[in-house]
Image (cartoon, rainbow, N blue to C red; front, side, top):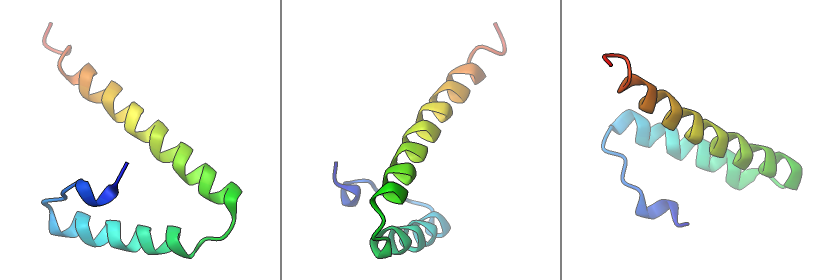
Length: 59
């Protein structure tokens, strides 16, 4: 997966991404990097759950 293929249209989100990317790039601890990757994966899946739940509120 290439993060450069994902476009952020919100300028403040773009700046936040650059900040986080720099932190990740400077990290040499594999366990920390694994935890970061797992956390983002889980947050992405949680976001999908929440968004799906929003569509069910009116039913």
